[in-house]
Length: 284
Length: 284
Image (cartoon, rainbow over all chains, first blue to last red; front, side, top):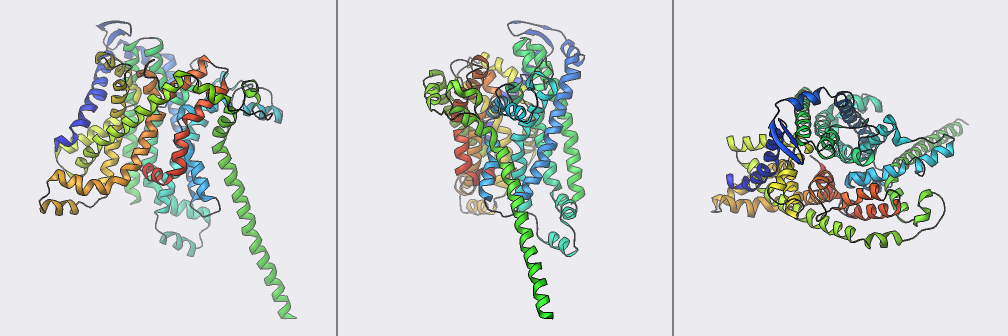
């Protein structure tokens, strides 16, 4: 029995658990990446980060805002699209292929394309806005436009995931409740809110949980689109830890940031897990 | 007279009844086409940009000059070719090895009970939540200690570690859905536990494992954060090489798009030809 998990456990210990232990150790030490004195400094890095204005007023709000907005919007769009795809219409297969595509393409490629599309001089969106009559907007030079582009990219990447899982769930629902609703002359909207949604609740709960955990660590899109800029205003947690380590070359502080982030998401995920568990049980 | 009136009324009712669905279908089709265009837009913009000569790249929506020169230029760069080879080798090896070691781990989780499987499942569940950045930062040092930084092993082993948690969990699901009574029968007939696994359980799980293999391969091919931190000059991967076009050759959007289009080739192929497998694999 142990033999069955031995290789997996060995890799897990060496390349996931060992690094986390090293990181935790480094987070208590003065450990510049190229000057590792490794002297014990206790909680100095933690207190620095937890009082850092950038971390408190930009990084944390950005991380949670991106997580919440991205999950909420892609869930909404995914529900709508799954509903549409659940019917038969000409071009059904083609539609499904196209919707699947963003999920398969590398986030880096998606972000690159978005960066080009929203280029303030030569991008297609800028041209469109000029054509309508708006002036030139320096999208990626301001906080909220940059943030919106990051959010848009994330939604573009993740809506397909929600769509496909919810579509599969819709197809597996029993027919009888819908027939009963039809007999009771319930309209489409009422059928959706009173029959479909309650039955989908467990699936939606699990999707939101998994996706929220992943959204918390978003890195690729933000790094390619803005690198956390302009002036650190779109930095999210992963970017903050990366910059502390590889730009400021402070491995100790970067590790402390990484540990703080890991603890935050563990607490958030645990709370959500409990909530999802309750939701699932209530609907049963 | 009466009869004539009824037929006209019935005729009108028929006409509206026939028209309304047609109009609704048209509206629906329009909405679907609009959504699909939105999903396709970033890909289309990349493809068009990649086909434009350098001097015409800045107004991709204007003019009709097209060329394949960008693709030739990209392939003339040894660094790009090497990145493609590296990514291909890495994705293939990572897929084969991580599936190989998680299939037994998933089987163990599904078929055995007791404190050890429970502890293993708890570990997997917990480490699935830890953000990548929290262990990839110290992983950089681990790679250095082991002397495998910027080698295939230095990026391959961490990639396998990423997959262990998620794949073990998914594989457990695969084996849960296979009836164990066949294996019991095989064991009564003199098969060992290992024989029952290899000869009975494994063949039934092959379709699901194939779906997972495709996703795993694409995931490694698309991955960015690990590649950014754990690879250097010798093992550069496509995502990092492509992202470097943005900063170093910020103006050469045509070349970067060509590389991006090549890099998303496998994703497009898989989406078009292996859609059924992927959709099956994406279900949790």
